Amino acid sequence: MKKICVITGSRAEYGLLQSLMLLIKQSKSLRLQILATGMHLSQEFGLTYKNIEEDGFVIDEKVEMLLSADTDVAVAKSTGLGMIGFADALRRLNPDLIIILGDRFEIFAAASAAYLIKLPIAHLHGGELTEGATDDALRHAITKMSYLHFTSTETYRKRVIQLGEDPARVYNFGAIGIDAIKDLNLFSKDELEASLGIKLRTKILLVTYHPVTMEHHTAALQMDELTMALQDFVDCTIIFTMPNADADGRIIMQKIDDFVSKNEFAFAFKSLGQLRYLSVMNIASVVIGNSSSGIIEAPSLGVPTINIGDRQKGRISCTTVTDVGAEHNAIKVAIDHALQPEYKDWCTTQTNPYGDGGTSTKILETIESLNTITDLKKKFFDN
Image (cartoon, rainbow, N blue to C red; front, side, top):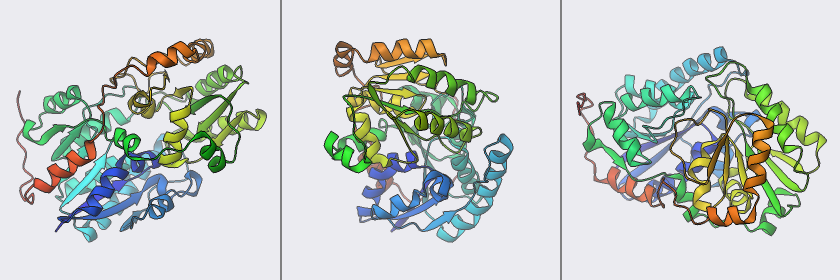
């Protein structure tokens, strides 16, 4: 029985990987291993490893790596600590294959350790662009360390091949996040109100804003612009989810807390969990911020997205996504437009370029069909 180790460092990663993890757990030919790290183990970010356990999974290893700071130097040091911890944990687990998703520094540390101790890596969501984030370069570096690739669009598949990867090991099955939308029984508005402990108004703004990590100390100014725009929407319920553990993330958290403390129509959550997050998104009037979920998942629910700034610059997006600068008047105009009933109706007719689900099943079938990987040597594929 092949041992498949899934590594997750954030609530978002786990939410996307959950359907695949469940399929691996149920497989008769694979044994699931789970390694939790990063924000999952942080009190500040909600100790979300508990959500993994509450969902019936067993966490085989935990790797502590986050320093209690959000500077660039702290992120670099955390990455180094992660490599040390992953080297020991992965040697103990000794998996036949590692599955990682995305581009964050925690995943870069895991991929680096796995590569150096000669463990094969399957990477999800390679080939994408996010020019405003350090994740962009980390993602491409992870691609070069990985043996198997599962991309979310054909354009991204071609880009991974352009990086020199063998086309025979690069698959496009669509975005795995769409599976959660298809698989979960999303809460109704009444169920959400009971779960969240708040009364939801007719119009709901779901806001997630992360630092633009390739910029220097712009988080405070950009959050001021965003909250200035949101201040005008007193007839809405505004739900904030907190940012990731990135440089300047705590500044954004403080700005959110300040806004919520002064406005009774605004609420903030460290972690909604995948079910509640998608349930809020499903009934939201608009998704606002710079999270990939607004670009990849929201279109499948027919919900308009306002994507602010350069963090997601370069990523393929649906016609339901409106790009604006981090300036309060532009944000306000975009929100006003998105709240128009006819625009919301139009959004429900658009096609998501990231596919329509079934990704986890296709990935599982591919992994189950593989022979044990013993030779990790890769030739650079010149196309």
